[in-house]
Length: 307
Image 1: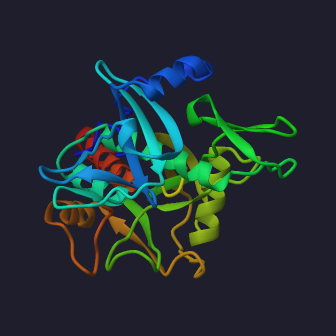
Image 2: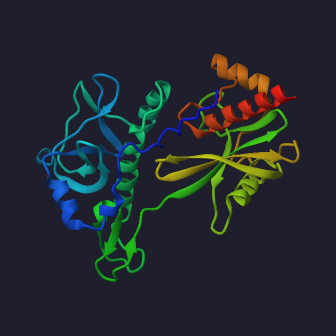
Image 3: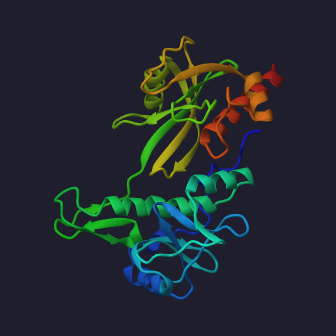
C-alpha cells in the first residue's frame, strides 16, 4: 500500500562527486573527454530516446554547441553533464524532447527509477543559470563556476548559489478522515493534500499550521515529518508531513482553493483500488501527496488491527 521507495525525482542514481566541483582542471578535462555523455534540454525538456520506453539521448561534445553546462556526476563507465545548446538538434521518430511530468508519470506507472532525478537536477540547474546571468549585489555579469553549481560576479566577486524553494505539503487528518483540497488548475475530480511555500523565519511545523489555517480554516496541532521530494517546476523541495486537525469546520480561502472536503478511509481506499472518476480522484503516483495519502491509510489500517 505505502510506497517505501523514494518519491519520483528522488533517488539520485550516480555519484555527484561534489568534492571535484572546485577543481576546474579536472572538470574541464572531464567536460572534453570522449567518454563524457551530454544530456541536452530545450525549454526545460530533455531529449529522450522514445523507441523503447523513455531513456535519455546522449551526445558527445563534438555534436553540440554548449551555452550552459552542469556537471551531474559519474557512474562506473561514464561522466554526465546537462547542457543547453545553441545548435538545433532535430527531433525524429526515435528521439523527442519530453517534458519531465510526462517522464515522471510513465516512470511512476512502471516502478521506481532514479533516472528522473538525474534529469530533474539538470533541468533545475540549467533553469537557474538562465535566470541568474547578473549579480543581485551589483548588477554585473556573472560567470558559471564549479561545474555549474555556482556563479561568480566578475566585479564584486559575490558568489551565487542555486536556489531551492521549500514547500510544506500536508495530509491533514482527524481520526480516520483526512482533508483534501481542490485548486482550479487541477484535472477534473482531483483532490489533493494542501500545500504552500514556507516563509522566512518559519519552522516546518509553523508553516504547516499557517497554511492549513489560511487555506481551510482548520487549526492544526501535532505535525509529523514523513518524507520529501525534489520538485523541478521550477525548483522546489516538497516537505511531506501528516498533521492532526483540532477542528472540522472548513472555511476555504477561495483565492487558494475552489473546494475542500473531509474523506473517510473507506472512500479513499475504494478510489485507490478502482481509480476514481471525474467526481473524485486522488493524486497521481508521481506526486508526494499520493505517498502521504497511502501512508495515512496504512496508519489507520494498523490502528484498526491493534484495536
